[in-house]
Length: 263
Image 1 (cartoon, helix red, strand yellow):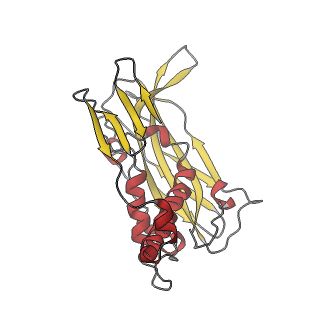
Image 2 (cartoon, one colour; image 1 turned 135 degrees about the horizontal axis):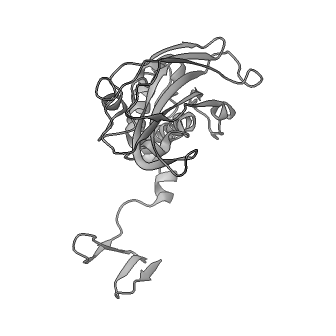
Image 3 (cartoon, one colour; image 1 turned 90 degrees about the horizontal axis):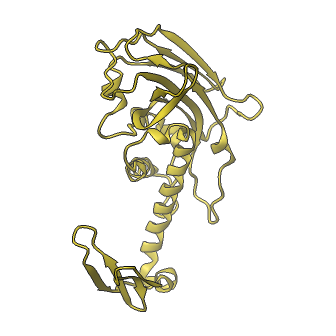
């Protein structure tokens, strides 16, 4: 459906025409609708390979969702749309499945979890550029536990924060990423909802923070130590500004996050 804007410009679709307005010039561009119809792609034998490619592409999109769920407490720290990049990672894992044919390939996070380690949610200020001391992490997949060792942090030594906000805190998530297996009628994976969250105390940027060890454990009533998934630990740093003597508010568009470990 085409829409008439206040300035008289027509944008949207009108039969076989597409109208859109360029942000840089304000001009309205008109294009003819081209390409093959969805109905033909769905039924024409000539597009059988296309349908298989589409199924594999759809599996990668669902797999990205499986990864994003354990990251949901850190998504506000991302400074770009990282989902297309994660989809490239998922495609790489999918292509390693040499047991199934095109259109039916699986994405085995359980076998290739190490390919997720170190994935950054930021482009401008990455987590590693802010915290220049490696955080050690040990995952025990059998018990559903993770131990994260946070070093002593000091501004100008191993902590470099480019913003003027006076406080920061670390946030850690620990969750399950299930394999994306081929199915004629894909269903959402219940295991994707299994995730834990740790929120550190606010620390003044100008003061040295003590080293600490964080132990996390997945819900023992829900967690099942079996194959078919990966466990992922992610870490982020949030910036804060005081509202009162006792209340600190998160500053938007400041901070960073990454996938720390996967197994």
